[in-house]
Image 1: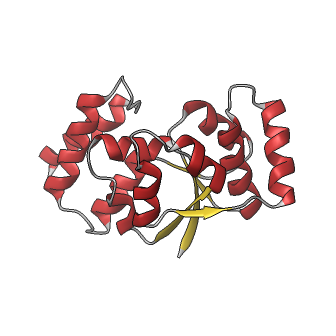
Image 2 (image 1 turned 135 degrees about the vertical axis):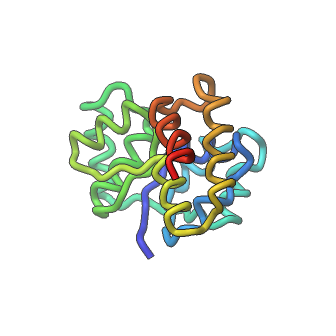
Length: 168
């Protein structure tokens, strides 16, 4: 099992398309710092509990991660405290960061932390045959319909994936 440090926005993407369960079909253990679970995953009510039931694992920061997060908050002014924590955990534990947040992605790239987002999760689900082609396309269509609001994904990447369905 591979561990992944998780930000909140990917979960919101999957919640909005009513497929919160999908990422848990992959062989990953998604970690999120306990205070983030309790402070950021509150809407809709019960989201935090639902994710924990599905398999999201709470974790505590160690001293190195706390210090890294504090440093990131000074270096990357556009990141929230919870973003800094997710990045610090990924960096210190040398694991992938799950996020779609543009500012957090930029900081992760600067810190040489590997990134994964909503579309990569969907790609892995279809490649691993955890979902059907119809489910994959349905998820992409729903994300496309919601894009620009709560869901903020690169539309060209969604379109590229949807176009592939006609290519065989």
